[in-house]
Amino acid sequence: MKNWFITGASRGFGRIWAEAALARGDRVAATARRPEALRPLAETYGDAVLPLPLDVTDRDAVTAAVRQAADAFGRLDVVVNNAGYGLFGMVEEVTEQQARAQLDTNLLGPLWVTQAALPLLRAQNGGHIVQVSSLGGLAAFPTLGLYNASKWALEGMSEALAQEVGPLGIHVTIVEPGPYGTDWSGASAVRTEPIAAYEPIRRARQAGATARAPQDPRATAGVILELVDTDEPPLRLFLGTYPYPVVEAAYRQRLETWNAWRSLAAKA
Image 1 (tube, rainbow, N blue to C red):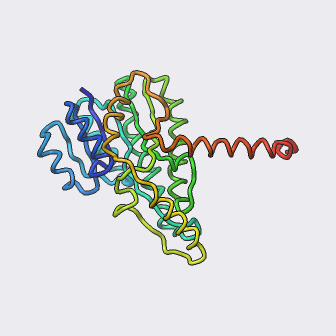
Image 2 (image 1 turned 180 degrees about the vertical axis):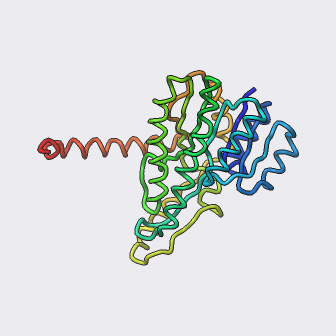
Image 3 (image 1 turned 45 degrees about the vertical axis):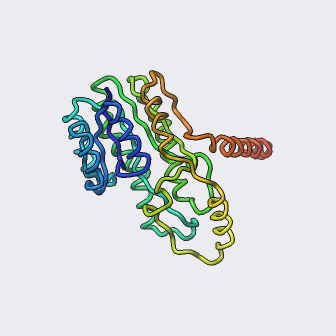
């Protein structure tokens, strides 16, 4: 039996993975900004689930929630930083408030949870931190500049973290989903005030997204369970096969550009 701490467990991946863990007999501290959304979990699974109200941008609240979960369960085996949302808009359109809120949730939220959990994981000589990134953490797309920035930063932080805590017996995995039918682009998303000059780019981006059928997020549940049960989990894991050609093309283009301009770089 494993003990989980999952942020953003009211819907989407967080809810699906919490239900999967509980259904097999694990225990889950499930957090959400609206704790009433977690009531069905508590009604179904009783004491196996610890529903906690949490806004991950509140560092003190994060520390208290992680401690409460550890006190209730005795230890934490899996910490899932899932809470986050999409900010849709061109870079020029994003307000300061929107940019700060995006980074507060998608980057600093996981940082606060990770910092709160690490003393506990170090004391018990092990654990697994799962950082929910995105295909957008590896390849950038128009209308998602600040979202991309938050996920690229999460990836960089997590790659360094893995090297820091690996020798202590703590695993870190960056999960990078492709397009799934979650609420990421729905009611939980934030959209900028549009600038007319960008409309052709926006329409082209929307047309491409509409033509792509999202995958069923419920299909990820078994994958995540298998991931956390692995003795030596990977640093990175795609969810679905869609990201492979996209990321392969992005990295190929980067290498080609660097090599094409190697002679200029050598003059520096």
